[in-house]
Image 1 (cartoon, rainbow, N blue to C red):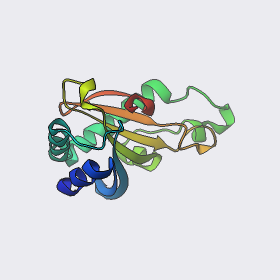
Image 2: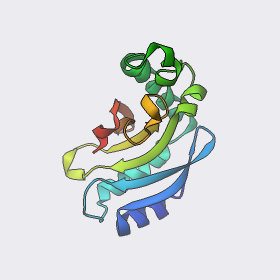
Image 3: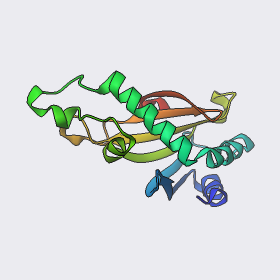
Image 4: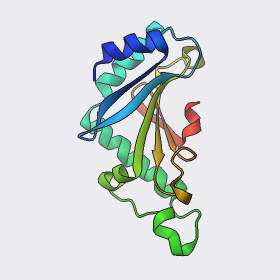
Length: 158
């Protein structure tokens, strides 16, 4: 991941689409800011640099296990017709199974005045649920000071 290029493009446009290694596979992902000011602050730049250093195989595995835990506690089996259980709520026990269900959408920098700490959000669409509506459903992950702080619906990032 060329973090310098990402920082430069975010600073110019507020949005940058690139590829990122996610659990050993290149995935298309968009970086963006959640405010209208395209200028990156020093805090934004430091957050991106720290995220770049954090994005290791170990952290990605921790992230996937955290998403599996969230899925099992909050989303597994909560809705859908019994005869379509596998489409609505597939069994997901391993990182590999979760990767089959996730679409890595975006990495979002919130306005830096909202948080004292370094915060970055990851959003994912998923394939389970009614009619596989990727855009309507999703998971948001808040990373605060290098730790997974919160997982919920992807609107936590906006």
